[in-house]
Image (cartoon, rainbow, N blue to C red; front, side):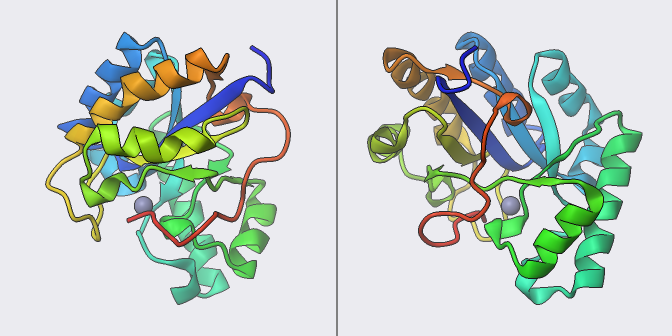
Length: 210
Ligand SMILES: [Zn+2]
């Protein structure tokens, strides 16, 4: 796979017992690969979903242990949260170096902790804003200009604390047209760990991970 011909599909805030399996079904139907930035307590509750994700060729990576903005935590709390999250994921068999922090809020302390733990901070280049609950057709239109080589697409397979939707059905519905659009532009889907070159650390526009 050409490193310049890939996009990364990324999902935050799972695993969710209802929606993550449906996202996995959609990815399988489109023969696509994705990265899941998971909440450690949910990973403990639903380990079988993450085993399935890994077995089907996806990447399981760290979102957080507690879903708290880093500008509301000190360096010690950020270090402790990341360490706890990594330990929990490691115990479940998911060793990861990829870290997307809550709401994408990266502070100097975040960067110091990432350096200390050898973690690769991962932001995004395009945001589905799927937490609003918009129809998939609307989201695909909004994402279209940003779907090019190296795009990192933010979506959610769980309903976060600030979401204004009841479920992730429209996100499930977004997978097939997104993969088709990428394919029509000569792009494949790749896991974050398979992407070469610089990744977005800070994020465009407003903070949108909810
Ligand atoms: Zn989140």
